[in-house]
Every structure is written in C-alpha cells, then in structure tokens.
Amino acid sequence: MNTKGFSIDREHIWHPYASMHNPPPVCDVHHTDGTHIVLQNGQRLIDGISSWWCASFGYQRQEIVEAIREQAAEMAHVMFGGLTHEPAQQCAEALLALLPDSLRHIFYADSGSIAVECAMKMALQYQISQGKTTRTRIVALRGGYHGDTIGAMSVSDPCGMHQIFSGVLPRQFFVEQPSCRFDAPWDEKSFAPMAEMLHSHSQEIAAVILEPIFQGANGMWFYHPQYLRNLRKTCNDLGIVLIFDEIATGFWRTGRLFAMEYANVVPDILCLGKTLTGGNITFACAIASTQIAEPIPTLLHGPTYMANPLACAAACASLKILQSADWGKEVARIEAKLRQTLAPCRQCPNVADVRILGAVGVLDVRHLPTAETLQKIVLKTGVWLRPEEHFIYTMPPFITRDDELERIARAMEMLAYA
Ligand code: PMP
Image 1 (cartoon, helix red, strand yellow):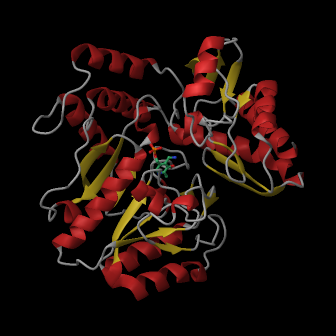
Image 2 (cartoon, protein in one colour):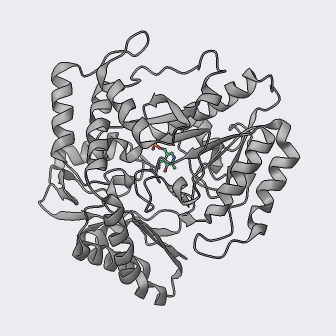
Image 3 (cartoon, rainbow, N blue to C red):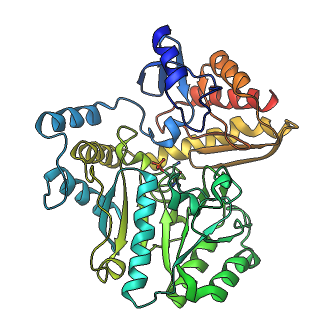
C-alpha cells in the first residue's frame, strides 16, 4: 500500500459524495483488467458495477487503449469552435448508424450532466424559436436522476441527495414515479399524473425529461413501456419536447440496444454517455431531431474540450466493440443468471423487493450497511459493490462470467444481511 499517497488522498482529495473532515474508507487501486479492479496489495476485486455502469465491455479493451494511444500521438486536443476533425466525424458516423432515422444532430458534451444541460437548452431554445416564450419549465419524474450540475439537479428527484439545494435550483415540475412495473399488466391509471400535469400546465412546459424504462441512481425502478408510448403521444399533441436520458440505459444495459426500443418510441432529443467510450474517458452527447435543431439559430453552448479527439477516438473504438459481438445474447445470459442467483435474497427480512432487467439486478433494502461494513465485505468477498440510497445493486460488465455473477450475488446477499 502506498502510505504517503494514502495520506495525501485522505487529507487533500475530495471523493464523490464524501466529507473532507471525516472521509469514508477507500480502496487503493493499482490497475484494472477485464472484469477486475486490482488493488495496490494485489487483491483482485470483481467489479459488480462496471465503474458506475460505464465499463460495460470490461476494462483495458486493447482496441480502445490502442485507439487512444494512436490519437494521442497525432492530436490529443484542438478546440472545436471554427475547426473540425476526423475523430469527431467518424464518431458521428458510427452513432448515426445506430440511431433512429429522426435523430440526426449531435452535440458532443464532456459528461452526462453536461449532455443533460445541453438537451434542456436545446428544448428551451426550440420553444423560444417557436415564439413560445412562456414555456420555460421542464417536467421530470420523482425517482429520476440526471446529473450533478445545477440544471441537471433541478430535474433529478427533489427528495434525493440534491434536496439541500432546493432553494437555489430552477423550479421545475415533478410527477410521481410511474407506478406500473415493467413486467406487470399495463395499468392506464399509472399515466394519469403525467397526463394531468402536461394538460394543466402545457403553456409553461418546454420539455419532459426522463430515463426510459429504467430509473437509475435515484430509483432503481423498471416501469412499463406503455408509459412512454402514452407520453410520446401527449407530448406530440401539446407541442412539448420529449427528452430521453439514456446515459445509463443505452448500449444494451437493459437488454435492448437502447431502452426506448422496449416501447418503440423515439424522443426529440436523446442523451448518451457512460458506455459511449467503454468506460475510458468522460464523454457524452445530446442528439436532436431535425425538427428541434433546425429552428434554433445558435445553440448557446461550447465547452473548451468539446469533441475532444481522444474521447471521440475512444468512442469510435467502443462503438466498434458494440457492433462486433452479440451483446444482446450476453445481457440475456446475465439476466437469467441474476434471476437465479438473486432469488434466495427474497428470503432476507431486510429485502423489500428484488428487481432484475437486462444486466441490472437490484435488492431494494430497508437499511444499508455502514461504509466500514461495506468495505469489510468487499475485501472479504473480493467483489466490488457500492450500494446507494436503499439499493444494493449490480450492473456488471457484459463479459462477466457465470461463476463471477454467482460471487456477485452472494456478496449482495451478505450485504443485505449485514
Ligand atoms: N443521467 C443519468 C441517467 C445518469 O445515470 C448519470 C450518471 N450516473 C448522469 C446523467 C450524469 O452523468 P455524469 O456523471 O457523466 O455527469
């Protein structure tokens, strides 16, 4: 263990959602490979959550590492204002080949949160271009999560971790979480709160933003595809822009290339990120339909590192990996294995619900273990997990073997009993 580094870390470096005066325990990582995080002391941990759901094809994929290396040797970065380059164009070509025909105009962003900010700006600027200047608010779902910047926080669950900022965030409209489960018979009543909101405030609403099918960080909840079909129709009827945030759900995570395919619905603006670079470099995008993009005179966003060539090259290589294997089959295998291995967790009194779809397995628990207990169990089981809110969950890389999934499930069970 690198003790000097460790004390610098504890004294000077902030970690996500952490305190500086009482920092939570952290594990010191030496390197990553395949499905593993390898610690400084040589211990190998199976990564049960794909580094916050982005390393979906596993770590250190040579195709991606090589692409970054080659790109770095030629041009690591150049500004995108007034200039363009091949990596950005190739990445666009690869994305357009995957996307529905109506989504054609790509804005490259530095992170998922920024892609969400851009999507909301697009929607607001679109409404302004239509003379609808009273349409300044966004509708979002309770249990939703869209990022940590101010705008993204304003559309994330208002009772979640961003609650402390409620006084300073832009005021948006919230609708209750879709109540009809993904696998239950459709219940029309579950769309009623959204219908009521959209109809009663249509002249104030620029857009609806939501995570299709699977609400991640703040909900770990799978809801019925019919909700999205009803939403698409209502947005069309009322001139409201529909934004899907597929930053977490995109690229096969839920068992379809994009979760929206379960509903066969296409939004006006789509956000992608995370797995876009196979978990190698921060990168995301917001992609608009021509109907939204064309009337916007100048989209008012332009970050310094926009379309960073290293990120574009990583994304191109990652999208090639996406095309090179039958990931749908791998994710179906993972889903079946999670159904089998997480079934015993239903007996645990701490577990209120077990939910599985695609390569996502969730134990909805009444209480979570402390950070110290979590670390002990991680080191004992050799499985990296990071429960949040009241969820113990796994979103493993798609290359995770059945015996590794077995170990992940047992570690989750141990956490539920802790
Ligand atoms: N949207 C969703 C659905 C997410 O899950 C996340 C990240 N967990 C974000 C947006 C924000 O992405 P980033 O952390 O890259 O800013």
